[in-house]
Amino acid sequence: MIRGAIFDLDGTLLDSMPIWEDAAERFLNSLGIEAEPGLRQILYPMSMTEGGEYLKSRYRLELSVDEIVAGVSHVIEDFYAHQVQLKEGVGQFLAGLKQAGIKMVIATSNDRQVFEGALKRLGVFDCFDQIFTCSEIGVGKSKPDIFLVAAEFMGTLPEETWVFEDALYAIQTAKNAGFRTAGVYDSCSAGDWEKIKRVSDIHMEKMDIRFFLEKASA
Image (cartoon, rainbow, N blue to C red; front, top):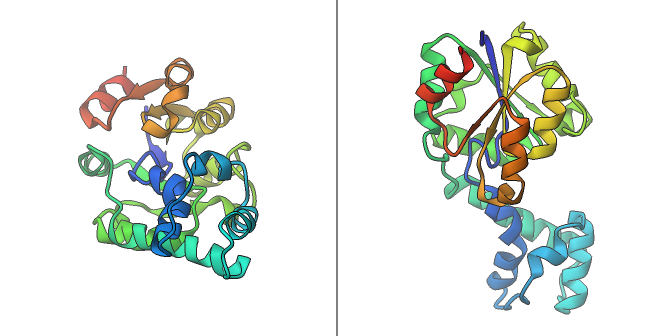
């Protein structure tokens, strides 16, 4: 039985993961600077501040670290405001769950001010009863707090609540907390896809409402 659904945002509902890899390169391009090959891999393990320090030193930027961080953040916010799109099948999927009377919320590691405008622009903001962010909960998805708070809000038990995620670690967290899990394919987590398929109760290459409802009620 499914009474509630908790959706991750980036890589699950929104086709947004590439901007997090390319934002620094786009920022440098806006300054007329060509980024070095492999910049995304260099910056991946760094915080925003550490990344700003690296860019300032490596490219001899006259901007302060705070200005660099703000510039990269602006690239990301502009992408969400004007360019990001729903992943294939998401609109129909959400409409199908809403028609079935299933409560829906978002649980995301992203910051509210970045994505809310995008959800409104794409016409899906009103599909959700609430949005929960890791920064507001105070802990990331390596712990189940955000999923538990979301289920409590909906008044649903973990075993009757599905968590939709593209990240292996978040799927494992939700599953260990007793939630039903749906792994959603995203190219940025393609390296974990075989593991995601093994761990998830259901896995989907794209959002397919008929497939999901069939499998979830089986």
